[in-house]
Length: 143
Image 1 (cartoon, rainbow, N blue to C red):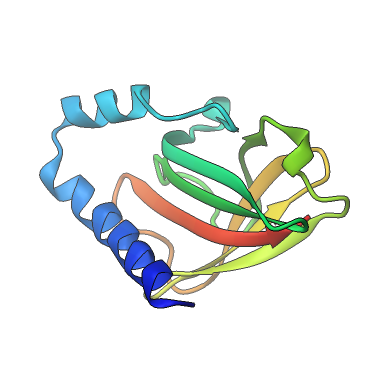
Image 2 (cartoon, one colour):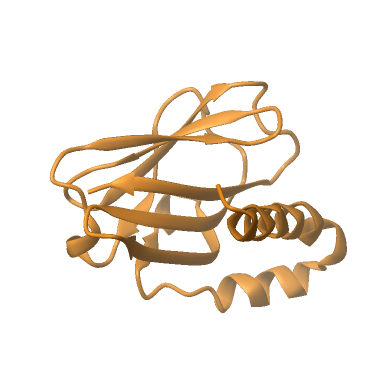
């Protein structure tokens, strides 16, 4: 990882950690309402909310997925949870792909299926604490 990407990733993590501490409920509602959904559709019926998304190709054979997701934290984190779908199937892989997301004391797997659906489950660490779980996703997946 080059220095620019490392700085970008650290800034992303810092924003995710500090956002709940500095925002009020009104600001959270505004942020959720203004999320960019042009390339990702969040599974609202499953209780997921989207703060923001950024999905773009990386070369000819991969995509970068950056999401900030929120859930009421009333799910089984040990099972894959459907979090949403890519809006453009051109970004979807030809086979199901998984990528590991490592946070400070937790690890997750993101599975991306050929139909564009994204699933998330925790693999290492204690489940997120509190009534709300905010998960920053920043991974690269082969198509």
